Image (tube, rainbow, N blue to C red; front, side, top):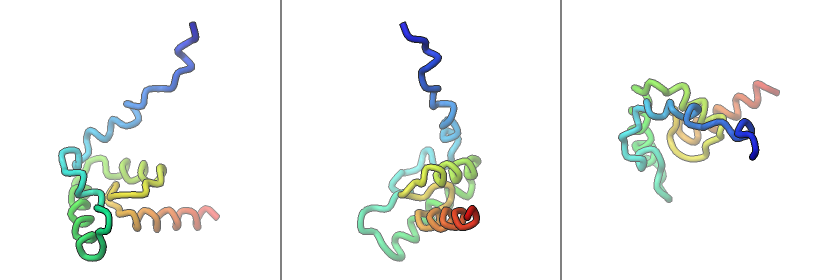
Length: 96
């Protein structure tokens, strides 16, 4: 029998912070835009989602995880898709 020491570590320890998120009980549709949503409607939805983020005890961890994962969709850590993209581009420029 193989040693269990070679098995991957449990991921619950890495993601348990999500249980403390202010968004935990919120409608996920608030954080992810429907196909074709544009303009003012999209900005209003994102701003409403960011209100959850503003009072979130794990905002910083959520933001960093979404940036590390290059999360392509939704509001994470108080940042929209475009804001995360701009932040990543800025980090890449600083590293160069």
